[in-house]
Length: 295
Image 1: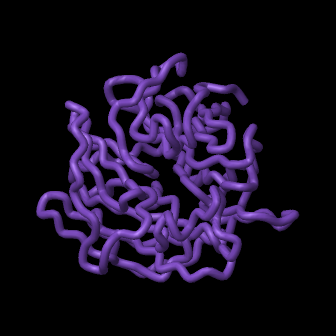
Image 2 (image 1 turned 135 degrees about the vertical axis):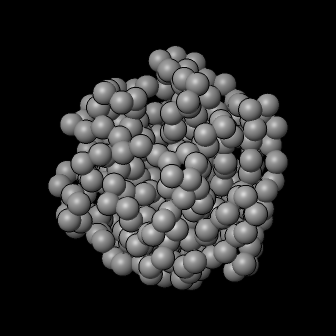
């Protein structure tokens, strides 16, 4: 393990920028917004401000799409760093806590919504004490940016969080409260099926306290790499849904993971508690993210 970047305020969602360097979000003041980190991790700067951003993805034109939580909205950040609010809801109600997002091979944008406003979720700087039994209405949103058609295609999730397309063509979404990972059948770049349980990644040996799966990414060989907030690990899941490894992070609160450039065989993990990005050499390379272009 090595420390790649430090001094970040509750970082989330590391993503390689097509022009070089990394983007992530900082959820906490004083620099809450979208952050650019140099390729060597030596320096960082704010690219654009936001309220309390959670997830981001980058399209083929270099436009950054951001899931902001305060206020709840889908944001667009253009190459000129101008921030626009694109939507605050769709067919299925208003957004509550937009979380993570990714493009499909068909150019559609999919976004998780945890199902409770940030003000109701975080009390006195920590998850609400009844987090295990609280009522959530987490959703999976499908967003057609071309016509700005937004619809909820699943609901009732208990804190929907990480999201990623796998090499097998399925869309994977995790549920933080239960620890379950679900998958959805996809045809021609659009989700067509109902959720199916794929795995549960919570450790059976746990002394207590809040924990749950957060951001995740796939390697080319079909393994799923998922951060587990609170447990302080990246869980590695086989294509059959079995946890085959748990990589220990320096802090207890890893929030998201991404692979480095092709050939590097390294993962980059944002860590909330210590405000840093950590790197780990692994035996795998990235399954490429889609960029909003229909294939």
